[in-house]
Length: 67
Image 1 (tube, rainbow, N blue to C red):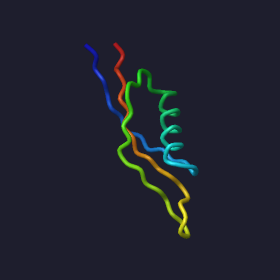
Image 2: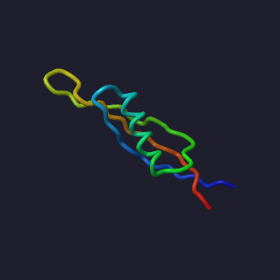
Image 3: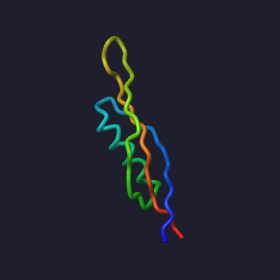
């Protein structure tokens, strides 16, 4: 029987929401082993002078706990 944990992270990018999600996943993969799933919970952006300056995503990562 496997036991999993869900952790929430926030990542950002000046390029796009997809880039923010990929960057967040890549960084989380450095310290979390056994990631089995990812769910994007929220996508937001910082705006300045009528333009998007930063894309932000909040995501939940699921990973299996080791014995």
